[in-house]
Image (cartoon, rainbow over all chains, first blue to last red):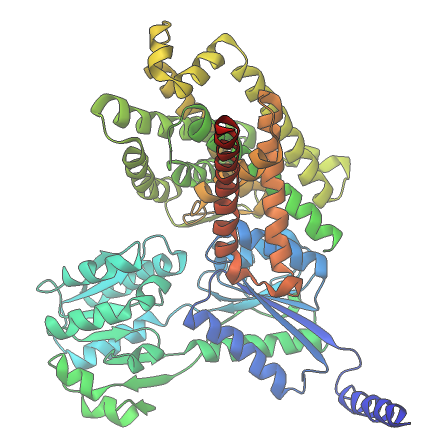
Length: 318
Length: 301
């Protein structure tokens, strides 16, 4: 009898839960590597899904990391294509490319891809067609340069540590150079293929530049502390394209954090779960207007936060 | 495991079977530990992708990729033979240089082939679903290549190569020019690995500067798994054990991807690989020791 009671209540609970969604939905996320920014995207997607009423009973959410290995990314993509989830969330360029070449049927939402056109994921932003849509995390580099200029009105040269093997970073540096040229600012590249190269690459910038700018580059963000230390040693303020970096010691950052990108990606996922076709949803560029500043680190790097910037800041890290 | 996932696993396993054959040629046949493959795999993908995007026929591009890989192998051999740089170190130098060269070949870190013609395009008209077509094509290419390599190793020239690795002094005393054999072996090995890279890029839609990372370990794992399965000394059997070893390795990876399987997840893969290769290396050694102990005991009795 007890069992029957239990079963009835369990059934009722399921029935209540399924009023949100008739059938449990399956969202499969994958990323090339486990990394704070990419993990934040994944968690952001999940948050939005939960807020929209997809709970543990009505949602199956899985995550696979390819351990930085494109061959495993390909295997994961094949597996997901065979599992036919309701939506594949492919985080990072190689994971997205693997997914797109593995299936033409399962809806794919890519995220944290800087240049989806160049990666051939889509042929246009407005109506991507096929089974693919997503979110680009191209940095607003023009605003970033303007922010640095607010701190340093006679800015002449900016040093940029980045990994020349990372597509996103290369795309950003290209864009940054174009913008800097218009403003008469010189960009000094500090290529660091591995996180262990970041220290030496950034130290070389001392004496050559007025400030350091860290793009959204996984290698650099992994070794951000090396850049911060160089900033303190060489009295070079370090700016970053990602707001989380400010909590780790960068002077200021304007833009989005990857949690926001994840949330915006999650919104797209929800639209597909509600019946929209992926190919009909325009690809957006991640938005966010958060300004983070870190006055203590600024002082240690020999600079003060301008009053105007401080007044605008959405978060002051103590 | 779904059918789709199973076929995809086999396809990637076959591609890495070429890597396993390449690694077998250097590590086992020539006794020349060669890490160049981490760079030549990417190089194959890079050359094929760059040429295809600039409008070259995919088959010609794939052949150029294999030639590029062979050239990389020659550089390693040259550093070792001409300047007496330790083989391992010579291959690390070439591999490091290749990272930059591959970026130059591609012009950027990632080239997409998703919408470009590939070696599979001529068969598209047959109407076979993509997942079967890819696997069939790759399997045929890899099996034919395996047959060709096994045949080669049984020719007079191939025997000379095997003698070079087994006992260089004896080989030299018998009139074998060992330097020439090492050049040829490294070129062949890296050519095969680059061919694998070129095929991988075309069946998976992209070439990426990071795609070669860990190639050597995967190749070695396949060779060792294959070897421990077959005790044969026939070249044909050994070469096909390499391919089967690669298929088994990929199936193991695929099992780890099904997160419920024994509680493994993808983040455990590297440890599983290391344990697998370690065990395969340790077990034969323990067996040998046991046999030696038995023989010794038998002697005293």
